[in-house]
Amino acid sequence: MSSDLTWGREFDSNRPLNPIMDMIINNIYIGKVALVNDVTNSGIIQVFIDGVDRAGVTDENLPLCYPLMSRVIHVMPKVDEAVLVLMASTKEGYDRRRYWIGPLLTNYEKIGHDNLGSGRNLIDDPLLNSQNNKNLERDIFPIDTEGSTTPNLDDVTIVGRNNTDIRQSENKITLRAGKHKKNIPREINDVNPVYSILEFIDNNNSYSLTAGDEIYLISHKGRNTFKKVLTNSDIQDLKTNSQSMLYGELTVEYLKILTQAFLTHIHQHPQKEPIKKEVVVDLEKKLNEIENLLAKNIKIN
Picture 1 (cartoon, one colour):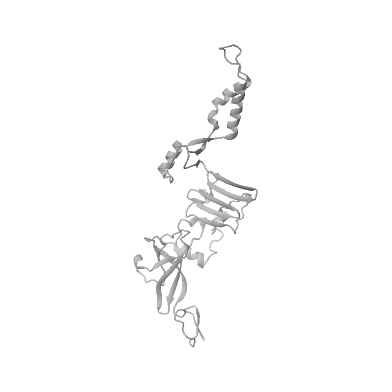
Picture 2 (picture 1 turned 45 degrees about the horizontal axis):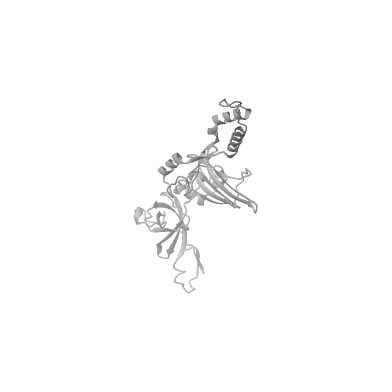
């Protein structure tokens, strides 16, 4: 028995050949995305693999490379990024069956686009510049109701290519946008991030929370109706034609004063000004502040 290092397994010259197992050996390579021209919308790309593909070959003539990731989760690599390529090979050479997974991103700062060199470092030298790089988005932006800065490795996170993510913790889902300052991924946006949290506490308690500069609640059966799917121009129209909500406690306070003023409304003589009791004076003040009852950044239709 001899060792065949070329094919990565032991080769027994006396063993009967299996026409499948002995002809096809799977190999994994790092390749550079050369062309993303997915006309069939099935995740097909074309990847150049140094040492495998002929130098000078045009991008269009590279073999098609099919995704290994489920199409339920849509993510496409960008040109010049690195991907892992699984490729069947034969003893006569490489065939054209290729499958990709990726892209390979070295750290959060490069989540919008990373290059082949950095992608290779992730595999060849994962500890390269480890003190300066954070490979996991959750290490930079932990979000915990108790203020913990320790990332939970059990969380499942889908990270966008810019400034969004969906994080699933135990009994909790968080949707975020604008989590870091625009174009500065290392600096947390502590001014106006927008996010929604859904959390199940126990059989007696759960809550939902939505935060943002402006919040719009749309019902298809509201007083003002809008299209079922809003375009950007529709959203501008919504801002103009929707109604501000009221601050509940302030409104109740106003109604109590209004009621007391009505119940204690007294004219000392007919056709004379009413006696301005203290509650009437309070009502006059409230009338001047009535605009304060509106929650102008929370609107409904």
